[in-house]
Length: 113
Image (spheres, rainbow, N blue to C red):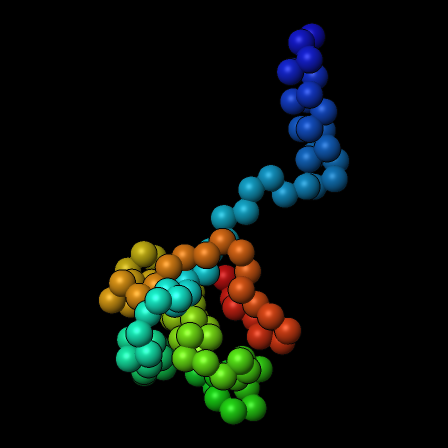
């Protein structure tokens, strides 16, 4: 057997035996860092009036801190995206959003997928 085939079989056996994840396709919808405050507020207003539970970004909510429009908008934009089928159109927000592939959750504030 060739060394490439042996290496492949070894890695395959590790995955099968230890259930090592090979690929993760999770993504989150976030605000663009350069979005204007007006656009971020409009995104918050839109998401919160279209089915997103925005209590988490209110004072006392687990995602209230840091208290910035960017962080609050990112949380509700992702919640909107996740609750509206995770389709491209649910993360447009007038071109003020982007996808990230690293979990943005922090502390008790969980960004769901």
